[in-house]
Amino acid sequence: DHRDLHSFPTRRSSDLADRLEDDTEITELRLAVADLHADHLDNEDAAMSAYQRALITDPQNRRALQGVERVLERREDWAELVRFHEGRLAVAPASERHAIYARIAEIQGEKQGDTAAAEGTERVMRQTAGPRARGRSTHALEQVYIESGRWDELAALYERRLKVIPEGAQERSLRTTLANIYAEKLTDSAGAIAVLEPLLESDDADHAEVRATLDTLLELHEGRDDWEGCAEVLKRMARTRRRSKDERIACFMRIGRIYAEDRKSTRLNSSHRYHL
Image (tube, rainbow, N blue to C red; front, side, top):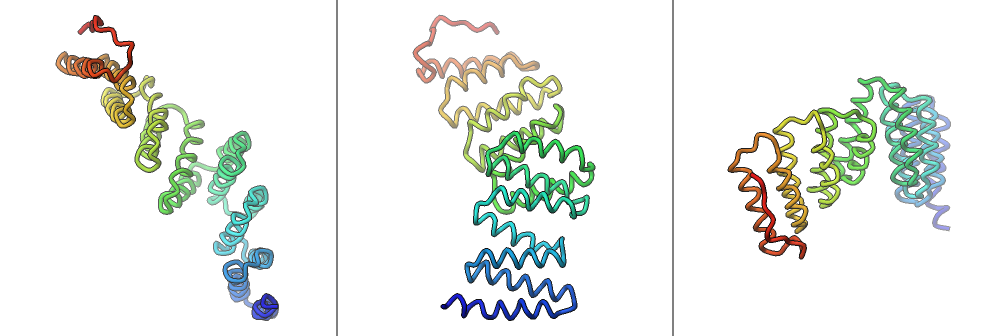
């Protein structure tokens, strides 16, 4: 059997690891065995066993942790992956626990479709992690998503964060960032519009922020050929404080052109008047 022949070196390596005394050498050898099983021999059970034995020697070994996660992701065994990360919480340094909680919440929300469980995990995460640890680990998770181009997962992370952060400058900044991801990375203009709309209701947003948001919304509606949406945004632009009379007239002229070109709908009322 070719599998028996291929497994012979790994058996010898495992036996050698049992006889070594230096923990670093033992861990490295077990990781080599695990990678061989996972990436070349297609033996996930043996790979998992080797990764877990390496973690006994070095519970924080990044290569072993990533190996276990890789095997469980291939299996799509999301429940076991959640249990694995929950087990890590007992031994992980305080500075890393926030990132672990965030990963658990991500799996629950995105892979298991359990929004309630994900939100519960994030509540525990906020209660147990200090602000400095939270900032470092969250930034690290964001960087992983950005560097690997996992924009949908980054968007989901930001959507969950929007549910828990208070209204204010940080929330408005996050909405702008998330809208850019939807529009530019995920080509989801509808998602971008939904994220930006609440900014227009904010009591704290200053005049410049409101104008910038309206300009962005207008571009998004134009990109969708949503002329009714364009007209509504232009009306809001005209009502914005500190708009000059010329600016307001320009807005209504654009609305008139939309109606004149029959892009809006058959509900056009040609006798409609705007009060400037």
